[in-house]
Length: 373
Length: 196
Image (cartoon, rainbow over all chains, first blue to last red; front, side):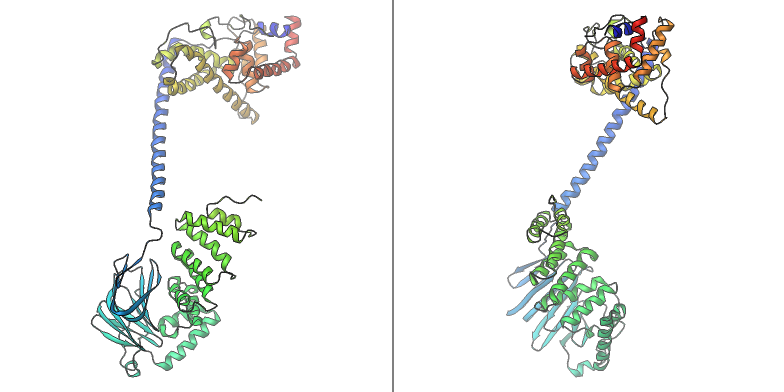
């Protein structure tokens, strides 16, 4: 240690060369840098605050967004919709059931009697009334539908509707009244003008197609759809919607033709009909699942998609699609902002499919921690 | 153990010592200009001795006081100012030395010229020894280097070195032993011991 001390004792290190002029110069630089740093910190603070406000605003907007908005309310003899549309039953014996209801599609079923429909115009929403095998499609109008077996009477007060029955369709304008399906004599009558469809494109073929033509078109549609030539099949069913009957097979083919020819927005109506009118059919779960997938991935309606996936599981709880449907339901719930629901569903998935390879992914989607291996 | 030697530094002004010694000049903590004028020479000297490079001193003083400007309002006791500034300076010097070592390793920077670091009145032999020791200190860790300089160039007590470096006393002792071994391995201590 003595060596160390001797070595250091001979190690004089100079102080900094620091005089008054240098002190003042550096002081000026320090003050400038400190002020600059203060401004930068303040700007950063403001930016961070704004960012935080934006994030919080976004989150609160999301939280405030009605997740499951009550689209329809029953009210003593009438139905009232969130958009202002309403349905009034005519007579005590009348009955209207609510079919699939979403922001883009509403379907009501007139079980018996008559009802007056006052539909608010919403271009992005399709509104349909089904009475037996007759469908009335509208955009925005006021009309009355009356069941008088085996036919249906439709009278339009305002706007236009399109009435579709197995074998044909016809447009009715304000002030017109029609019975559907029409008599043979009516069907052979001069054909009315083309009806604009929901998407605004006119039909290329007039309504009231002759039976022989329809039969030929129908075989053509079935053949094309079964062969997988969907664009052509879709063209045929657009030319004459009557080629699609109410059978589960036809509806499934029509849905396939629509979605696989680049018209996914047209597929849900067919798929919904399968899930409501053919609930016991073995294709109903697949229809519900396909409906969910289209709504989730192509139409951006996760809340509706969630219902469709839930319906898949309801229709076939132990079916081959049940696991996929539950996983998709978690995803749909999460994407529609229903975090608690997504979590509960992810929890259910964990209990039902503990050995699933996608378990961690589903749990993450549902906001749960992955299970450590 | 090792005692701090009074003649290690070329400047004997007690206000330039890192810690201890009491508050020699009263200073108004709320007056930044006064604080700067009072302590800038002290910070500059510490920076020069730790970094061994006059060219770095001004930057270091600026950095220390810009940081101090931000936190000065939190200091209530004027007597604690020197220790507080010393800690900021030491922390920043350690960081700077580490960065320089990394850059030197990547050949992005060369070692400073340590021949200028000795006090103006030092003999050529003393100046050569100082430069040699600083070059050897380049090879030890940043904290080891700082601890050794604080202890043997500044003459701080072990407690003050530990306080300034924000580490324990035993860590300070361990670092000192590391540097001593390095210097002894390079013959600096032995040579000076035999001939000094």
